[in-house]
Image 1 (cartoon, rainbow, N blue to C red):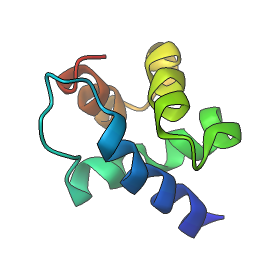
Image 2: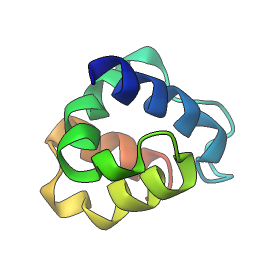
Image 3: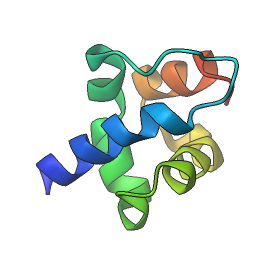
Image 4: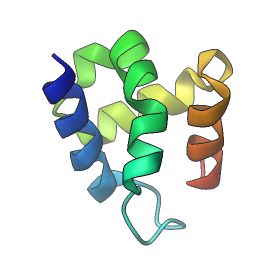
Length: 74
């Protein structure tokens, strides 16, 4: 499961808002790994849905993941 979440986060890099031209760093990916698994597991492998889910759950995210989402336009 951990590998699937990490793979989903890697794929998420292609679907981030245009304001964030580069993909997430390894540190950013690790910051959101647990939150992605906890709140958005059904969207693993679906980068646009994963990004939307993380934005929709922003108030529930860990501080570190929330900062990543906000920094990337969410």
